[in-house]
Length: 433
View 1 (cartoon, rainbow, N blue to C red):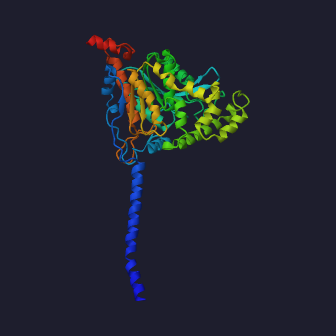
View 2 (view 1 turned 180 degrees about the vertical axis):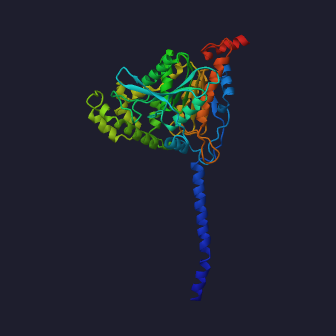
View 3 (view 1 turned 60 degrees about the horizontal axis):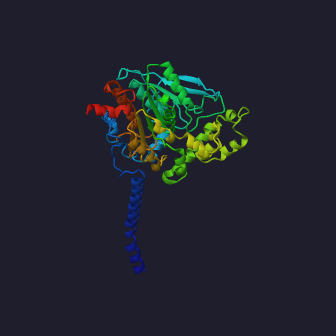
């Protein structure tokens, strides 16, 4: 018995030490996972810029210093592209303002009714000119989204008039007037809005801005026809994927949880489509049948919805044809106005192989600047010290800063520069030499 008792007493003191070791191991494991998931060891850096050595590009980068300075996201979570994307998707922005605008309705030739919201400037523009931002939001978005309201409020205070397209069918309180919704690359509604602005404000100059899917639409719009670039000072595209056909395969991969994001976006598209089912699948619809509605219910990806529903609005024979004709990659090289393309390296929706498109374009065309940030996620780009983000994001500051620089260039450019500043770059440099 004494021997047994002594064994008990010798083992018992070691138990707490063992449990302490387990606790330390668990804490260390949790910390390791947090550091890895939040990407805390990733450095902060200025955007990686690709551009040609021209007088205009140097002027723009000097006049818009936020493009060349270090982008510093919130310390604890801002280096995670997933959290940046999730916060944008869930909240849009923090302490979002409520700018006041007037809703405009534009009848289309096919019976559809395009709508956009018009916001007048809240101050004089620094150039003394009348300048209008024509803005195309992301997929299924509209002027009432928080990130759009924040950007509009900031632009208004800088002296810009803002016109924001409401994607056809995206506003929950606006009924469709024809069996057609917005699609990935249809520019009809955006063209109608731009035409209205040009006619109503004949003296205004335009800054074209597109977010995500909206970036594809605005670049396709400008590249479709040279006349679409008239009175346009510049264009800014943020977080677009450039080629739906090339993005299709990557969007089905689980890498960076893209398949999960695809499912969530498809579910949102389902809700938008089903909210208009009476118009899209009703008696007056000649393009949709009951089988399409059945396939919509079972769809788990955007590609399935695009194949069964979206491509049919414009009579495309296949998904490949739809993606080929609706992607701006086939039009963007026709854009001659200054063009700023912004992407994030940790954007979980845009695979890094797609970024060769804007980088190659910037290497070949002197009017293009491609800015790639290390962090920012998809339309996040939050800034902040440790935990809480600021209402105004790096993205908001970059777009307005670039637009301000372009307006300044337009006002004080050398006499030899014409409206197409980029096209006379070589002549000006030769005359100076």
